[in-house]
Image (cartoon, rainbow, N blue to C red; front, side, top):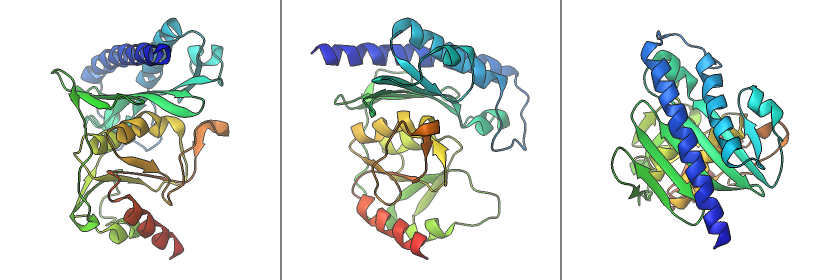
Length: 275
């Protein structure tokens, strides 16, 4: 019971921090001049301000915990980087969506306990969509109303499924991997947090990230949403997702699904890699 109370307190701290950051981001977003050709690696002063808002609140509420986050900011620099409990934060996931002002960005906050994700919060400030989970407590959404439970879809056939992925280059056509997966529909967005929330909410059937390298903070908070909603999250070839590697790197891609599609999708991913 004590541990359950600890996780409830951690979730409350994460929700509080996310909402504070969301308000700050929306204030800046209203006055921000869109950058139509924003680069993939763009970062903004708002990223750093959001991160400081989140980390300061987490340090106030959970002073013994370590921190792992995307931006180099004072609170991160002053905190331990490793420990039994580590907060993993992406202050604006999908900064290109912020910069282009298309709304495709999220705040991602997760708590690792001995390397396992135990709390996850994904807030989409532009649309006021909030999705969160605690290990063993299910996944929940709150979109301006009372919290409602989330559940992944029951689609079993890849040919009937909706795939969510990162926005592709204009006129590039579907990648060999997408061609192999044969989705009925493809839903693109800049934010990995949004994509993982779509799967957890049952609004997409699976998400494929085939990037050669990305970071823990890009997926950590969304990972637990999918699992607590009844889905499965692995590397592209079915490997377990491990957190806390040097540099917080992830190098095996990511496949998050409703679980029913997972084995077939892994086999298609493996076959594509062999070719």
